[in-house]
Amino acid sequence: MEETRENKMGTMPVNRLLVSMAVPMMISMLVQALYNVVDSAFVARVSENALTAVSLAFPVQNLMIAVGSGTGVGVNALLSRALGAK
Image (cartoon, rainbow, N blue to C red; front, side):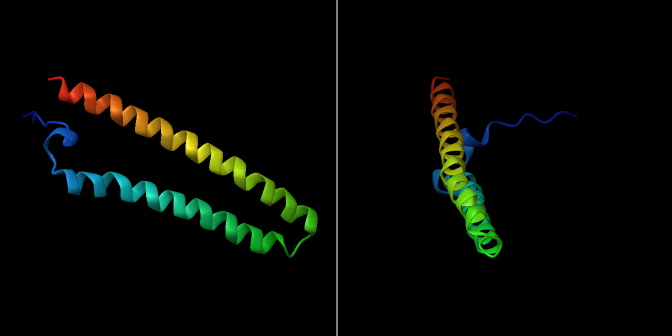
């Protein structure tokens, strides 16, 4: 038997919805930042040029995270408008 389920954005309480959607993104960004810190610590033992390369890659990675997060926020805004139009 098929069960009809509504979208959680239309039924879940706002505080619980905010936590369930924001916490995974925050953990992901923390892991990415820690990855760069740990990577820098290990690469610094190899050579100065290697550390420079890792240091130059960090802003690029942050830019990619920003674009991904911005796209996610935009899609959520469009989705909430579409759900609110019903």
